[in-house]
Length: 295
DNA sequence: GTGTTTGTTATCAA
DNA sequence: CTTGATAACAAACA
Image (cartoon, rainbow, N blue to C red; front, side, top):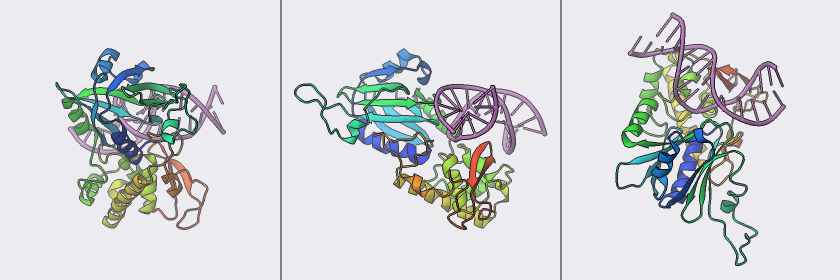
């Protein structure tokens, strides 16, 4: 499940690898994956370069360099999407592939795969694959006004920026009857949290996911605010969490998995009190917590 | 065949 | 209008 730290890891890596490379061809294998008519989608990219790679919440935003109107490629990975960048296969004199290829090149092994829904081919022979087992993810070309609409209507503050203040957290919780779990998953209130980091943040703040958001006391809001900031920052340092499908742009797993305290640890002991972590459905999602530590 | 997995949107109700 | 809860989507696996 790519959430903010995973998408940010991909963004940073891709910014270093694909910016400035001319796109030679666009291949769409699953027609519904590209949300524009295929001809428009391809014409928007072929012969151009990416100028910037940004991120808003879990949404990747590639600015296409162009002389006319600004266009952007949006990519959302949803649950099982992957973006894997493979540099050009190095050839030896006889035209055979070298043995002992680097990991970056190994990332392109076996691609396109059964789950590849689209890929971009760059002029230098490198390729960017969009793989998505569940087919929830998408690619979409939008204009600048469309992009601004999407950002304004869909995303609250980024957890690592100043706009995500304790004051903001208190304001969005005030009077709200919905569970704190559901509230933290709402992208319009805070951008980028998903099921893993919500559970981890609530454990660190010692708050029960069932609690109505409006019932949190000032001290608890403070704990939650710093828990969210630190969990997200640490998860980025560790290059995200691999639970099932996530890999970074070179096909590597995230290292935060070993830092998880509750997510996926139902039945195991709570790192704080030693009693069993439970899993139940809250806000329609599998929710992991310690009923003794989290009140 | 059944239940489960989750990011996001649609839909309906209050 | 806002808020909240739930279904739906998609595909694979136990």
